[in-house]
Image (tube, rainbow, N blue to C red):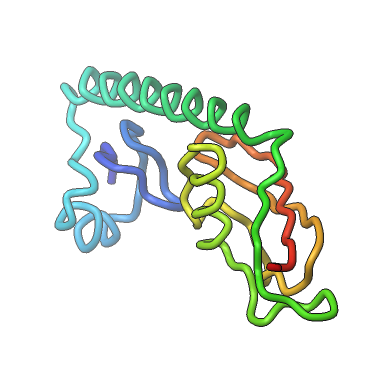
Length: 148
């Protein structure tokens, strides 16, 4: 069954794509949720408009992400934390890093954009991978220092 996607659907396609899916998937999931409409003969122009809109939004998102990346690359974010013998009492997580990034640089990022396998538990410099919208990826240097 051919359908036109009205929103991005993980593993299926992006907004504006005309795809062929199983009839049951379309009838039970895509159509009732409003994620797709049946692809008829006159839907090509609508699909093209959706793709243009999607491309413009992707370009704006990527441009905004590149601006944030330029602001943060090369900067070291300093985070004071209570520590003894280079071990922290507690840890520094993604929310702490995001808060200090905004305080020190003014750049706003989401905590979900940080790739942090586990919270930081030691004093010193740590590299944190940041993956922003639009495929912009960079390393952020975080310096955890012991509070006086």
